[in-house]
Every structure is written in C-alpha cells, then in structure tokens.
Image (cartoon, rainbow, N blue to C red):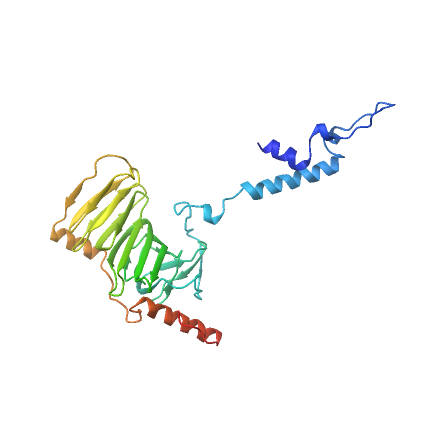
Length: 307
C-alpha cells in the first residue's frame, strides 16, 4: 500500500515514460533514472512523499482519540494564572481540599482548582493523592471526588426556553458521589455517566461510583433510580433503586444487585462526604452565565450582552 502511494505520488510509472522512437546508439542508463528524470529529482520526491505520509498517517487527531487513550501526564504544566475554557461555563468549583488540577481540552496544561472557578465542556478534573473537590453543574447536579480520581465533563447543556437539561460525564478511574436532581425550572432532565465497564443514566438519584479499568461498583442511596448497562453486554439493561449495590465487571453474565444496609450506607457516605457548599456558588444556570459574562466584560472594558 505504501509502495503504491509512493509510486503514485512520485510519478513512478514505466508506461508513461517517454522514449524516442529510434535509438541509434545504445546508452547506459543510471539506476536511479528509471521512473524519474534523474536521481536528484527522485530523491527529493521520495523524501517529500515520506513526509506527507507521516503527516497523513503518523498521529491520530485529538478528536479521533477516545477518552481512555488520552492520559493525563504526571509532569503536565500547571499554570498559576487561570485561563477560561472554550464556550460558556457549565459548572463551578464549590470547594477544594488538597491538590486538584483542572485541564481544559489540552491535557498537557492544567490549572490549580480553586473555589469559585468555572468549569467548561471538555474539562477534566484530576485529584491528586491528597485532593478532594466539590462541584456543581448548571443542571443542578452536585458531585464530589476523592483522591486519585479523574473525571471529564463530556456534555452539560441547559435550555431555559425548553426547560430541559442534559449532562454526560466520564469517570475514568477513582471514586465519586453524585447527587442528581433537576432544578425547579427544569421539566426534562437527564444525567449520564460512563466508566470503562459501565454506563448509567438517571433523572433523580444519589449514588457513589467506584471505577477501575475492569470493574465498576455502584451504590445507591435514598430516592434513587438508575438505569445501568454493562458495556460488555450493551443490549442488557438493569435497574437500581434505593440502598442497593451492583458490581459491573468487564465480562458477560447475569448481573447481581444486592441490598445495602443503612449502617453500610452511612459508612460509604462518610468516605465521599460532600464538602460544605460555597457561598460563592451561583444558584441557577442563568446566574452562572450572568456572572461569567460580567467578569469577561470587566476584563475587556466593554459591555457584554446577557445570555
């Protein structure tokens, strides 16, 4: 395949090489002159073709890489001055303890998480070995992450006109607690989260997810209803309600759901205790955007429109 492309791009095709109709005296032909005018031209073309092939097939683009393939390097640059992500903010940091890094779409540059900072589409939150964080999204979802956890905000849309909201998160590894409850002005709300082995969605729930590369443990608390899918067997769906536990492994087979006692639930809640909510946090989606617009207008010295 590569040879065919090289020959095509370089113009190597013996059937189209012009030769004189009558050859009076036989002449010696240099080896590299076959298929090209001369050896120097051929070498230049060959190097150019190799360069083009490397550009075309050498590295996949960012959009082609899956979440699992995008690793967060331990030696990533952490900037002191926070820079906003692309688009409108979709959430805010409510409280932080220890070291927590927020990456935008570029996984090699991160920012130290601080209370009150906005979150954006595509942001990845990475807690270090002593880090904990509490965040809230514009749809009203609250989540907290324990140390050694990595989570990405894939989608978070709030449509005030249609009174609907949709959120989609990816928990690559680690533990987190999620409180999903739509705000009063939202009529339709859908929350989705994916781990390496499971996919879950809910409209209202309070639950913990513990994710690793080959196992996902889900524990639900009061007023919860989850629809869960094992990614190894995506055509099979099972449901979880109040005070239940399920372990989703990277294999096919019957799915077991067991009861969690109140004492066990209390102990699990303590492990991922939600930090006290910050007073700096905006209470609605519109308030989020008003504050972000005002901040940007203040920086630029202009007047910003309300959105």
